[in-house]
Structure formats: structure tokens, C-alpha cells
Length: 315
Image (spheres, rainbow, N blue to C red):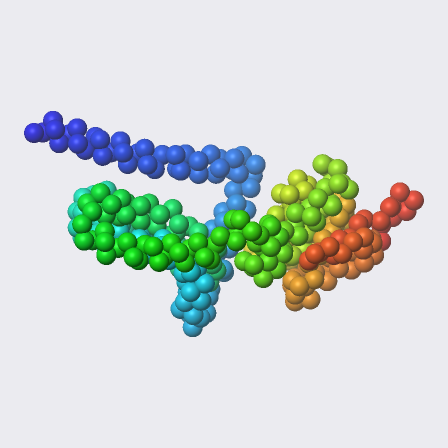
């Protein structure tokens, strides 16, 4: 009996280690890399500390935001939510083993991950999908295997929910272009525009050139495969930094010593109220020309300074 218990606990320990080792090892490798580069404090601040500011949400809009997003998502995810809810109850109360308990508890835990910031943006709910889908699949498979009256009661709900899903989503898969998907889902073509803006900039720059985007679309750096000026990847970089005045001085120094080939301004980012924009805008007006207006972006190109003895710093 003792040897059997030892084998059982060793097996459970092995399962637990197998579950936690890959993500733990990945995290340790990332931490080691940033520590080696001398950027561990920055990495911790921008991935952990800064979120304390982000989660300072007005509690009076907490449930209003949640209701709005769930109502928005429910038409597309009715089948997913219904199947996961029913399966979670079954796993918790009817199928009492450790694995079922673990799977059932993943459902509320994943929802807590969405709820913690209190903003409830619809795209936050994507992290629920894997856990809800696994739980729902287990429940539906169990019903299908047992047949009988529980399946016959569940089938109408499944069919209705699936019909809602097809009705809501079929155009995204079979009718709309990527640009139309962006407009239908987000009310604008911002993400589609980023592709064309990035293509325009990439064709006019070299791999070693800097660019600077001041707005909400840091994907431009990824799409262009061009370097960000210093650490300025968006308009929040100055205002949200641990030392805004020092961050502003770093930006000014970088602008003067490594001026980016292109500066992309996003007019609807409320620039006048954001730290650092006045300095950046003055520098842009003195040393850049407005080359193109494209989508959400005003694209400024660095003037040809080969015949200039000094740069008009404008700061």
C-alpha cells in the first residue's frame, strides 16, 4: 500500500512539474536576457508596475463596461458560453475528481483575468476562449456519448446558439475583405491602414533607419521592421514613465543626435494634453516636411540636411 501511494504521489508531482516547467523556464529565460542587457528594471516596470496605473478604474463604470462587452460578444459566443457554463457545473458537482475540479476552476479564474483591470474591452475576452472551449467540448462530448433526454434537451439550445454564431460571423469568413472586417468590428480601418502606412515607410527607409510613431499603433514598428527611436513606441512613453522629466530629456537627446527618418503623428491622440508632444511637434515643424497623409497618419520625412551645417533643433 505504501509503495502504491508513493508511486501515486510521484506521478502527481511529475504531472505538476510537467505543467509548470515550460512556462516557468520561458519566463526565466526572458528575465535572464533582460538582466544580461541591463534592462531588467525597465522590463519589470513596463510589464508589472505600470499596470497599477492602468487598473485604477472608476468602480462606477465597472459593471456597465462588463454588461456592454458581454452583450456585444454574446451574439457571437452564445454557444461557447452556454456550453462552458453547463460543463463547468457538471464538472464541479457531478464528475468529482481532481482533473474535473481543475478544469472547472479554470473558468472563473480566466474570467478574473479579464475582470482585474475593470475596463472589459471586448478583445480582453479572447483569453477565455481556450478554457471555455475545452470545458464546453468535454460537456458536449459527454452528452453525445450518453444520449438520452439530457442530450435532447440540450440540442435545441445548441442549434439555436450555433445559428446565432453563423449568422453573426459568416460574413467575416466568406464575404468581407480584411479592410471591411476591421471597419465592421472596430468602426474604422485603423489596423488595415497600418499595413499600408508601414509598407509606404518600409519602401522609403533602410533597415538601420529610425522611425518614431506618436499615437496608438506601435504595430508600425513590427510591420516596417524598423527601429524605434530610443524607447519611444507610443505617446504614453513619456507621461507613463517612472521619471517623466528624465524620459523627456532622453527623447530630446535622441531626436537631436539620431533624428528618425520618418515621424508618424496620429492627430486623434489628443497630443496637446500629452507630455512631450509640444517638444516633438516643434522639432518636427522645424526639421521635417509633411510628405503624406495616409489613413490615420500624418507622415513627416526628415529634410535633406546634407547641405546644412547644423540642424534647427527647434526644442
